[in-house]
Length: 291
Image 1 (cartoon, helix red, strand yellow):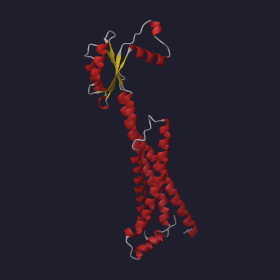
Image 2 (cartoon, rainbow, N blue to C red):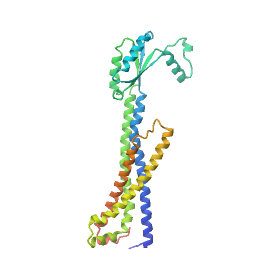
Image 3 (cartoon, rainbow, N blue to C red):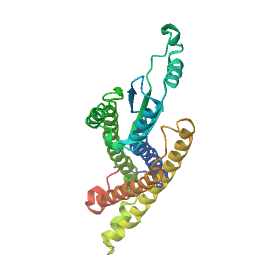
């Protein structure tokens, strides 16, 4: 059997403890990013919902008084979050900015009708709800046509659902990786003190008494790793918000930080518990085995 000098073994234990903290930090950092994407998906969804516009085109001969009345009626509808009247002149300016040329020069007149742009409430953004709203609006004789981007809301909800499922799967995978990495690092530290564990049991120490200091140490390692990863995640969010404020909101950041600390402590404590139990249940021959 092969034995290591006490000095070398102590150095390996310290190195293993340091590696365990670094491993916990990296894994929890990736876990935090995944959780941030899941929480931030709600913010992205709200921003995407604002882009879903139902445009109600009115007949060209609709009088200003009728346009004002229709706009006010639409604003008080239960499915409407906001209604904005767009005059033919305003619509022309928007088209010129988008196309880069004035199409009215070729036509000789402004062919765009007056319109009202509706921003719907989130609960009415499904395809079925929009179809019902369209049918109701078409009963108004002043309404010429109704336009909206079909399947846009379905596409938004589908992609966000896929993102959430993928994020949860990645989060579970990261937790499994964390348990494996921390368990390997903790095992060496516990192995160096396997005879101390056996001696404590022989002199009457209970299993919980012997296990406690090892579990506390691994919990501290988990909390230390969580501290580093939480700090890195906070700086990352602050940095990204400067350039991508509309996408990155930092929503749920403090909840994610709390989750990271809880995972760090739980994974660290669990790894320590399992590693110590191995030697609490070990036979005489296994104590002399060199890992």
